[in-house]
Image (cartoon, rainbow, N blue to C red; front, side, top):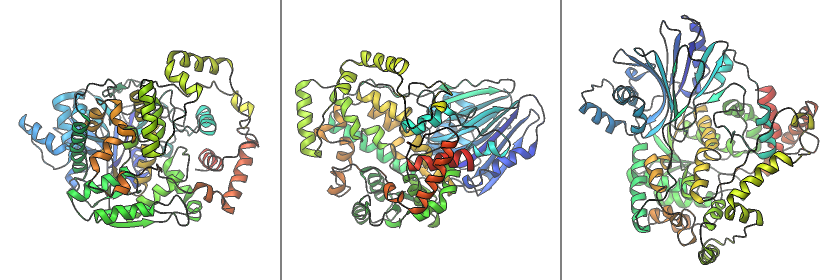
Length: 595
């Protein structure tokens, strides 16, 4: 886990070598263990900040060189690098480190861009081929590791974080349409074009995409190398599916525990993080676990956390985030996040990672991604419900009420969406184009300043809905929050549920397996029963990782800050006095004007 940066002077053979150092200095928190810069006579500069996790020897420092042909700056972990190394040695490759970065270079030499299909991991890298004079840039399948890029003043820049661009003079200009969608629709991503960021002319390399660029090129063509198949093809029984899922998840956790530094887990008390903690304890007992607790708050999950730690015999550490701490550290938090976020739970996560670092746990395994892969949210029930015929719908209603105390009451609009999907899609577009709804909380001058796009689309079955959550709206922002928060403290977060082997398998299964007997995440519950207390496995309520925002918003300091910032946004003709969402007002104002 590291920070990467690069500059390619398109119109020059020699650039300013001090700029790449400035960019890597801006990423110090991502890699405090070592730094490096390299450049050639073709105007290309590569920079790196290292957080040493695998092979702590200086020979694995970056930018890394291979066969006198390749230079790479890389952020992430290839969890199956040991197995890949054996395969590549069979083809005659020799290795001089025990690092995964050397395996990436050998794999690219052997398979070209097809090497990406060989990697089980999270990654963002830029690999320069000196013979082809080509820069190969790639990002992992689900977007766990960030890769930003921009063209500015005849120069191509890339980095792990946008602050590296601003450090060297790239303008920081927010997109009005992103401001609008954040304030009105609670969106922090562009659901129409995933490459867009909150800022003009700064883009993301999309998850599961790569591009190749030569010096003279000024346009980026992102190419997709991986996509989940939504067509059901499995012949497994439910019991066989549970068994196969268990084996794949165990393998994923085991691989993600590979480390030359201390490994722990985050633990919220929910099923997903508890599962990861339980499997880790089977592989290696007495791992540390780290949790956020909230005093005098109904969102506190301490009872469930204690159940898990007692069962798994972990060494448990707790932190208690509060409003005073949030106010004190708000600028640091927003500085590291760079783009807006919606809730104070991001601060709670920030403090968990800080707690881990203070206790020398540099690698953390986390349960993120399970809800999106296994249909863990209750809103996934509706697309599944409408896949069923009438008798099956009645049966589902009955078991949901019995097992999880849920009653499905689809609205007429939801019925239309799933029973007449084409008509619903057409009506959405017509409504957006013809009867544009006015939002009284947004200043009319601001609304007229840009062409707004339809931000929501209809998805007509469970698999399509899950795919949308995994790739477009849902998981992407959570991975951004997690990466920025963890790297703020020089901590690496690994996500066992985001193994592509696991995802590929799950997407072959019938939708019914996801809600077997009326239980959400039924496959996971059956797979982990016996390894966790029943109160965790068969827990009915669904509580996300939530902070007591409403309680924090009552702080006099928060109220005063909100009122001051609200006045500024009103004066700048962005909102009207009717707008009253505390966190968004504070968050947006700081990003636009202060940080």
